[in-house]
Length: 182
Length: 182
DNA sequence: TTCCAATAGTTGATGTGTCAATTAGTCTGA
DNA sequence: TCAGACTAATTGACACATCAACTATTGGAA
Image 1: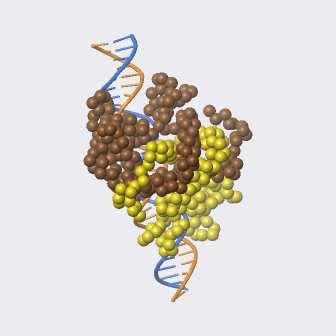
Image 2: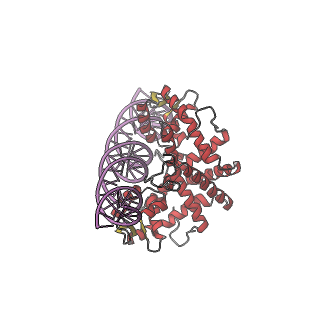
């Protein structure tokens, strides 16, 4: 896959290196900042917030576990562990799916509603002040477009976590990315 | 701090929500993808690679631990734990600083040089193909500029990990961010 | 010169994500 | 209707980041 055993590597020039380091620092630092804001201003971590927020935008505030994981771009097991903790906190509840005996529906509880309502203004205000206010609409569009393309390119390489199965040959039963050439 | 006890929250419209979810998915997914590439194509994780790469660009391939942590935007303790593992692998070595009895210098070993040389082409090729090739130079500039501004805005709130001390009042001895109003 | 606050780095406990293995339920075809 | 492959979700072991507490050293002010 890496046909780069020779001196043919296209190294980064100074400008590119700067762009790359900025990007790297950003992707490492932003998730932590997001979580700090959430924990400081609410009773939720950012991942908990995201789960509740996703559920709350659903007609019944209820969702299949697998769909929820897919929507968030997470592995099933990550969600499962998190659900255990969140159920213990009382913000969600798990119930067997009527349609599929294997499935679990995740449901928002009253306490979950209260938590997300309390946390939402702070979260949205933070996002607004931090990502939208400093950028023009045109820049926002470029940003989204650029990140979408980068993400797509990574998915082509089979290295994007959530996007397994897009081009997996049938019979590849891995729960993660498929092996294109195996 | 959150003067938002009323209905005054400026919620996100559909377009903004889309931009935000794209950004959120990106910052969650990209670090993992970066690490997968590193582990797949080399004997290093992405954080190990970053340490070795930073050291290798230094005159003596040697750096104070604290400076290294600051350069990477990490907490000291994170680096310390990582150094323990990397020293065990033999890619770096720690030696007492001549100038400051408290300090430790981190030094690249021969094995470390070999590891970074072996990993670099794959890493750089990945970065090139995934972030630079899909973007025009103009887009790259917008991206860097946008992320820099977002990062600066977060730092103003004291929520960016690495950037403590920028505006801390003297006497604030926290090793993390300062409390602006305390 | 002697304190005492500040700084450099380490350590251990804790929380959370990842991976591989496992359990349970569904679906297809013979 | 039964066997085997597939899918949904969970579990436990492990790796790593974070936080707070700690040790050692420095440096300035009394």
